[in-house]
Image (tube, rainbow, N blue to C red; front, side):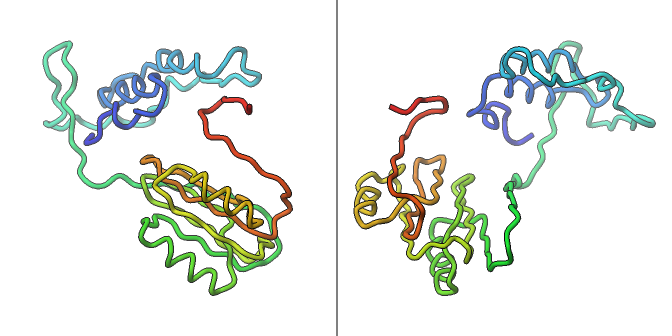
Length: 215
């Protein structure tokens, strides 16, 4: 595997890195250590789950005949880690899209959009009577959803290297705009969308970690 487990799981709890290392280093016909893997994640699941996961039968998941081992699959001496094969190519990027029932309307989406192309997609959508309804970011690439059913009457947005540009947001609040969508990248930049024609009369925001309470 070209990308190390440490790099893949650098923003996750240690259990994910240990699980990934275990799976990557597992022999082809080796019995997975299901019980050990489950214990890794137990502290993350919280006490007394209301619907515990049933794993009976997970031990025997191999169906049919095992394939023969290739010459390149030979292992090192006992106790050593198996040899790793390097898989070439770029990793795939996955986006999760949630659809809600709605009366027919014009809608458009763009994904894997570089910073330099955001303006062109938004301007084209505005020319067609569409406003941004949702934004997201993954690996410095943006996803934009634009549609004609937002009810907005005007819209502005800011692509900033500063995460949530405070002065710009406060200036737009004074002009009657409210935040209707935002997303941030791993580098700390952000895309903030503010609109008129919203049902809001007051708005505030807070930047903090998960679980931080409002002051």
